[in-house]
Image (cartoon, rainbow, N blue to C red; front, side):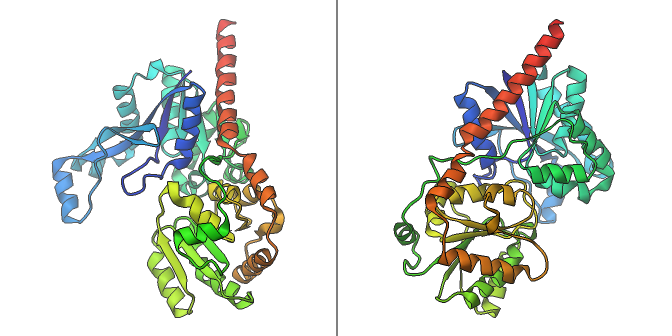
Length: 401
């Protein structure tokens, strides 16, 4: 089996772990003897356009021909874009993407195409599939379902057509599948396979040792958040939640935020104005996260939307309970619905109350570990491989008949 993988997300020098959920599953593909090539399409500007953008203070990065992260090669195909293209050919962008793929790759040599993130790559994959007779699969991760279709309603019909045309549309949670159905998807070719957790990387460290390792007080309970500091992740709720937790708790606590994003400055300002001390660590390398997760006594996930939040299972594997909102795939990942808070009126206070309750009476660590083990990458990525093999076998039998 030989797979052409197209993805809009990939490691960069600034964020090397940006595609960690893709990298982890591809490591299992390698382990199981599946051959694949990974490609992303990126824009390369003409000299005049580059000069104009430089005057505007905008600059596109040059990634070279490929980048390697954690043993996986991510290759790049560059789309040449001139000033004329930018001004007059915006509507031809999908055609340009298809041509770039078919001109640069031996498309006919692949048994199937796998697309991560639906728009625009799944639309291009469908056109290639129709022309070359190669089946395509897609894996919907989150924002490609719950955000992108609403940003451009005109794209919705071809967006849905691309999902319906796939041999199988894989959704990382039932909640994400339900969202797709709510915007018009039939669900006929859908299956749910969650993202997984790397159990060799996310290992529990005793709380005291973990807190010492990252330099936080060992005599205080730690409540932490890990994620992009964006509204969709509920990052604008963090200070209010922390403030309410401190008011309801009996002892002083340590509040920690790991991650970066557009809300970082406003979070710092709000924390200062509300006299809430927050330990903001910025991005932490993937290899170091288990120390931070183990140091937390509770992790919070107050997102407004999620496909499948890997951090929940990673925290559980480190022996840390998670309190989350009831949005997207969060309840499925948490498993224990007693730790899920319905969104809505007075959310921050209710959420804080549950965190205080968990701090005083935490779940059994063995139970948390067992929850995580159900989603080891060997299991989840293994299901994907079985699915590809079944579809290809079915097509072979059909062709022989």
